[in-house]
Every structure is written in structure tokens, then in C-alpha cells.
Length: 178
Image (cartoon, rainbow, N blue to C red):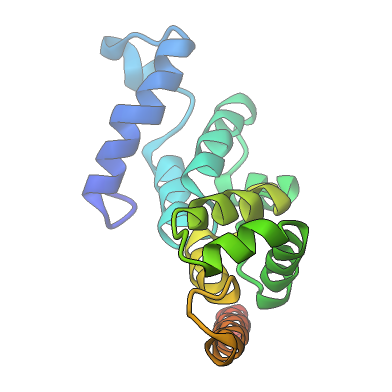
């Protein structure tokens, strides 16, 4: 597999690729001749997903655009602005905005209503228009929402959230330097 991850490649072929082929009327017996993407192009797309450059959902959008245009996955991600955001400053801004907009939910969460974590996650993803890296958001939002009791623990949680965000920013700068 071009991706180095045969299971991921198989999942993509059996899911989004076959769905796109069916939508375009490509017959399985003529798949290689009629499907508009070579395996290397699909591999490039899957690598972008595995690296966390784009989400699974964005990957499906990119797949469709690749089939329509013949452009590479990287080019589409760049020109369409589909890359996930893990920049600490941007994530912090979205998180702060959501927490400020929903003070009642923050109070309920701090009071023990842990199921609201999903609510916060969804609101942050909406605020970022789906561009925030969900893993980074979950870690930072969990801390920033004050998943600890007492004022001192909440201060510690906010400090930890800032540290997590600073570490994410550092990792991103390191990755860009490579």
C-alpha cells in the first residue's frame, strides 16, 4: 500500500472510494480503467489523514475534488484551506469563545455534568468550522472547562490547558521546521 497502512487503505477503498465509484457509475470489472484516481493519488490522500493534516470528513471532500479535477490531495488541501488546525493560539481562541458564550454549561460541567464535554467539543468544532484537530481540542477543552473541583484546581486546570496549548504550538513549529 502507498500509505504504509494497508488497513487504512482497505477501509478507504471499501468505503469512500467504492461509494464515489458507485455514484459515478463505475463498474467494478472496469474499475481500474474507469476510476479517475490512481492508487498513488489515493495513497497521498490517506497519508494526509494518517498524519492528521486533514480529518476523515475533509478527506472525503478531498477525494471527491480529486476525482473531479485531477488535482493532487495536497494541492486541494492547500488551496481549499482544508488542513486541520492544531495551532495553540487558534485553539485557545475558539475554546475561550465557546466557554465565554456558554457560562451556564461551564458551571454545570464544573458541577459534575461530564456529559457536557461532548457539547463543548461540538461547539468548538463549530466555532472552528471543523478545522480544529479534534484530539487537541478534546485535551485542551477538558482542562479549560475546569474538569476539577474547587477554585485552586480550576486555576491549575487553566494553567495546564495553557501548557498543553504551548506544547502543541511548539510541536507544530518543530514540524514546520522539518
